[in-house]
Image (cartoon, rainbow, N blue to C red; front, side, top):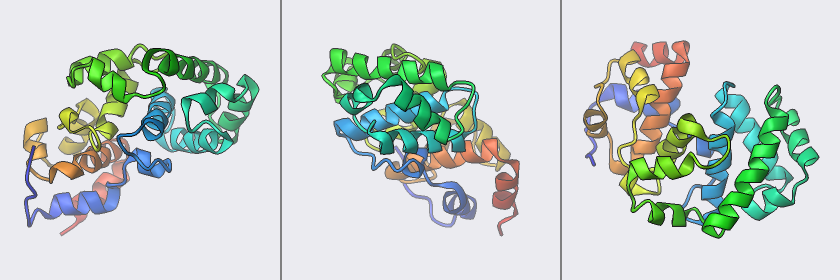
Length: 217
């Protein structure tokens, strides 16, 4: 969807300062395979609530460490074990409801897709809008969680590119970059679009980070 544009210092600094994807931060080795895609769904569910991204990432790590790295593993955790994992990450106020929803998500992904979210992509005919629609069937995901999933999943699902939604475009405005997905996609290699999306979201959420990027020579 784009080619690398050399000499664009702003984009280079942006990726250097903020180009770690949220999946990477959560310890997810994202690939087009069942376990990492499930882990991304968990992270997207956690991040979809009104809570700091850093807390959502920490909560994902705690759940994975507790055994929830696969749908079966999550289903085998008791509700109390999920609540305790969320509590260790200070994922408060939403912990009990989220523990219930994650169990329901584990059941749904096994029943509908045999534990493999690649089947969701096939059912969606590799159409981004349809992927988001199917994702919203998972309890707790909603429109925000579906967008988060697609922003990150474009690293391994090329048909989602470029997924640069409103939050990413807010970040682009903040650091003086183009304000349309297609124009932004021209600034990086295809494989860097997920990193660019994450970086733009980070500067949209962090004024000081945006100022550091803007202050670069």
